[in-house]
Image 1 (tube, rainbow, N blue to C red):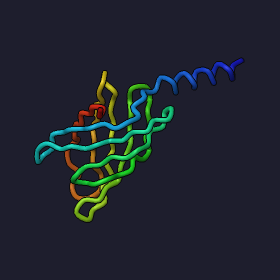
Image 2 (image 1 turned 90 degrees about the vertical axis):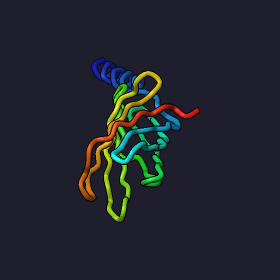
Image 3 (image 1 turned 45 degrees about the vertical axis):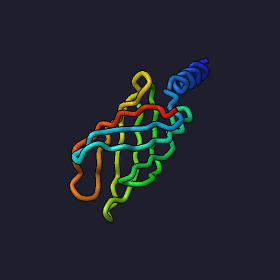
Image 4 (image 1 turned 30 degrees about the vertical axis):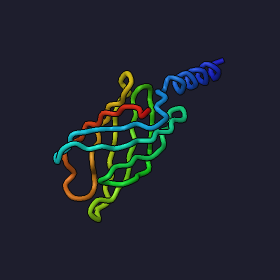
Length: 122
């Protein structure tokens, strides 16, 4: 009986994970002005995969993606000016959008976190 209850709770938590599968267009204000990025998310329960594309960093694969309720997190690895960068994204589904914060590690500097505002593409 106890195992059945635990299994039911796990299934319920997985079902509560936000379904964000699809293409999302993102905008942010960076140190050099407006930026755009496209995210293609594939949600499977609490696992998040997919890819992201921007004119500055090109295409990157989403790694270590997790969805917990309305919260999500993932990383990407990109190359900029010959330096490998790891970007960590964390955020939350809010109504019909997603708010993400990205932080850079590796490469020169690091920099300030960037706030991304995502809207589902039509």
